[in-house]
Structure formats: structure tokens, C-alpha cells
Image (cartoon, rainbow, N blue to C red):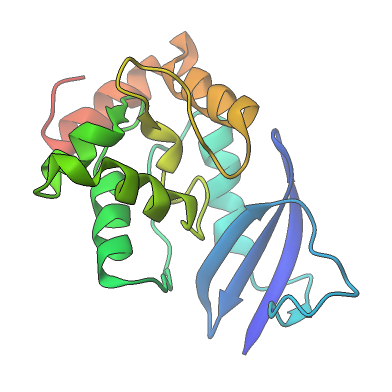
Amino acid sequence: MRIHKSVVTPLGIFTLASEEGALCAVFPGVPDPAADHGLGRIVEDGFEEAELQLSQYFAGRRCCFELDLETKGTPFQRRVWAEVSAIPYGQTCSYKELAIRLGDAAKARSVGAALSRNPLNIVIPTHRVVGSRGSLTGYSAGIDSKRFLLEHEGSESTAALRVQCAAAAGVPA
């Protein structure tokens, strides 16, 4: 059974959706109640852990999420999302670099298309993927949200968290 709930974040209202207890969507805004959005019924309970981890993330006390996730996508999309999830907190990667990591530099546009279909904004950190020269391009929650998230992760107040998360991932901070 699918359920959903809207929550307030520093980026505005986001909607969380779950299926059989696994988080399957985090997206900006509130779904139109008149539309058949397939998110199931609205609930007040059932998202406590996701809400806690999101609040910890925005407070600068969490770099990655430890939630039961249900990601539906093509095998290629899932590979892209898995690779994006490996980008350390506070760091970025270009679309081309990501395509190279996936085995084909020519697939940068395909990588971008897969990122645009990421159902789990913030949790799967597609905001960490930037243009070849570091430009902020495409993000389903908007460029201002992408800028906010990157500035948040790169701020002085999260410096210790960046070091801790990079060490846990085995990469330089």
C-alpha cells in the first residue's frame, strides 16, 4: 500500500511517499489532491525516520541516509543512482565524469536523463552532479534548490561532517 505525507524543509514543502514501508519518493511540492498521482492516501504517521534523517541532514548532522528505499527504474537508471549515491557529501562530479565511471563518456546525456527521473530527491543526491565546468545545470527541484544544497554541504558549519563522511567512504575530503 502506498501512503504519502508532505513535510516542511528549508527548501519548502516536500512530499514523502512510501510503498510497503519503504521510502519510494521525495519530491518538491504538494501533490494535487484532485489528480490521480498514485501516491496513495495522505497520512500523518509512518515517516518518522525519514523526517528525522532529513532534519538531521538540514541541521548539518547527517551526510547520508540510512533508510529502507524502493527505487523503481530501468537497470541503467538504477546504476546511475547507485553511482550518484557514492559521491561523497560536499563533493561534486560532472555528468561526463559520471558517464565515464559507468563505462561510456558518450552517455553523459543519458546520465542526465536518468538523474532527472530520480524519485528520491536529496536522499539520492543528484544535486551533486554538475556541468563539466562546475556549472549548476538541471535539477528537478530547481537550480536554486541545487545551489542551496551544495552551499549547505560545502559550508563551514558542515566541514567536520565532510571530513567524517569522506573518511568513512575512504576518499580525501
